[in-house]
Image (cartoon, rainbow over all chains, first blue to last red):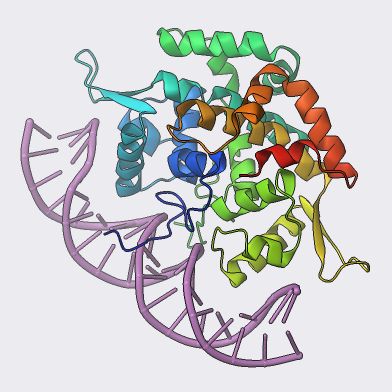
Length: 154
Length: 154
DNA sequence: CCGGATCCGTTTCGATACTG
DNA sequence: CAGTATCGAAACGGATCCGG
């Protein structure tokens, strides 16, 4: 299967000077991948069925594939929790470090999307107190607490 | 349910609460799209053939499609320059505002990509003097001067 | 029931050849 | 030089089936 496939998500074409953008695209450049990361980071979804019923309509095979890929990339880990049914997925430090990128994307979309669904308060915090918001979300992701993340829910 | 196409790049599936990530993915979430934006922002490529010979190996139809899509999204404009052969593409203010996202991606990749091709000096500036670097690149993009952007070249 | 794996019809993407 | 046309190759999405 080394047939020089040119899937943007798995292996980018050409392979020129291997710029940083390539690495990022290979790792999380896929649309579904980014949505999963968003769910893990801002929403409270963390299980397989959480993602399935997130309303995006992702297929089971696609979801399984993306979760496996994210795991291989070291962005998420699967924890077979004993207390709750099903396995939980969690962002690794490497995954949590994607936060600044997501915040920039949110800021850009809020500026140019005529009908953003992002809460005004959250967007304002992204602009005005980015550092504090970042620390708050990181703290929430490490521990169990979900505080700032709730603001993103629709 | 909806037999409407669900291409991640053009129109995202489900269409749930239309979160900011969706808008971003629809606009520049495609791999090739992001590479074009990168070329316009950091490299000195600005024409159709510049992109073609960028070494990425993009096909002509894909390039034409992405350029048209970026134009429709208001991220780039096509200028039929009289002085030089061929048409030049340029980032609009909306496109230039993607810069923080790209810088965050570069920073993340530099941190986790074992063999990044990004010059050390540039990455250091991304971390240490982000604001100044941003202003410098924006200035270069507006005018004709290319100063900081040269640092990204391999 | 949850977490997938497999099969298959459809759609989209991408490489090449070709054209204004 | 700047794109279109064609066509094969993947990826996607849906349904179904399977192991725990």
